[in-house]
Length: 472
Image 1 (cartoon, helix red, strand yellow):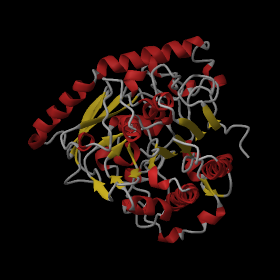
Image 2 (cartoon, helix red, strand yellow; image 1 turned 90 degrees about the vertical axis):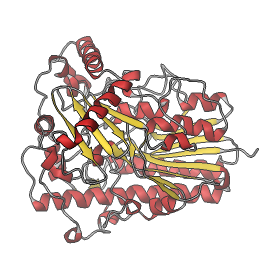
Image 3 (cartoon, rainbow, N blue to C red; image 1 turned 135 degrees about the horizontal axis):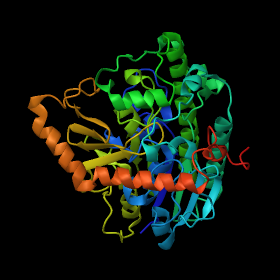
Image 4 (cartoon, rainbow, N blue to C red; image 1 turned 180 degrees about the vertical axis):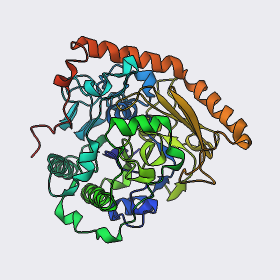
């Protein structure tokens, strides 16, 4: 049988709605659009946690965050359980990563022996962001409002890093792809903040043409969302001009990402390997980008917890999949494509190449235990419904068939009482939310105490994860 390669292309903080193939009226993403036109688009795909480090641990291992204990951006994957890199490497695959991983370091045996431009957590990670959680205390107030109000054109360390990642990916596919089978992960940072977009892509958009989302929080006028907004300094409303400028930069970063994805896809085509390579594009989590008056990730709205997910390859007919899928499905998908048996019998996901992954009655789950919160939040998606449970607040229930933009919370509607109970039951079929929240807080408290307590954690935290010194 011909070698069957795997190419995973990842981004960071890409809203599932901020692309042409997703129906965005202004987003300019021709390369992702052509990939989507040639493969399967999963229209209801979710991350396991809407924040970088926990999500990436799940992508690597096919496991939920509470199973891994990777609660936050100071609890990275260290190789304690097998990754798909381990399993493909054991099967004779040459496994290479280029770009952002957000694990602990390059020395841990995470199953990715060839890491190029490897971007990991800085020091011990964001201990400052979680230092309040063990005491259920008020989160420290951040400065995300400045990042949004400061959106502009130009270059940042992240855009320069992404160019280096694309250069190395092109070089790999040009010079090394003939020696297979291989599995390659190309991981970009864009469109993650800061909202600084290269001028070439900034100029693609006329800000006056950009649609400003409604700032009416509607169903998201919720006490736990209030905590989040206060924690990130987002409680004061932005002006139309500020919103338009931030959207301008964000969409320009999406187009910058798209151009780099296009370079990788073109190099794959030129290598002669596309005929037996599975290509998957996704992002570690989304970005609210002004929807419901919200910004950043961290929450369970579709723009934040949802992710773009495209899968293309030989013999995969173009199609759109409506039923919910999850990042935990990637591990069994890559092994299934490679013809490698899945040894683990306790993985929650299914291969996206099989019918089980798109079972209309399946449940997918996401959870959040990190900065900007006091208690955990959990989301389960089943069929047309999305149920959200908060440790410290009332639940939410959305019917995405009749309300795809999540403007109405049906949790108090008597007509939905049975569905509300079903959501709570499905969540508890996966985990005990009270126990999981307590476990996360105990672990976070221990890590904070290990560096000297809350007064010392700022020494271990930086505003943004710095790029590797090897990047150009």
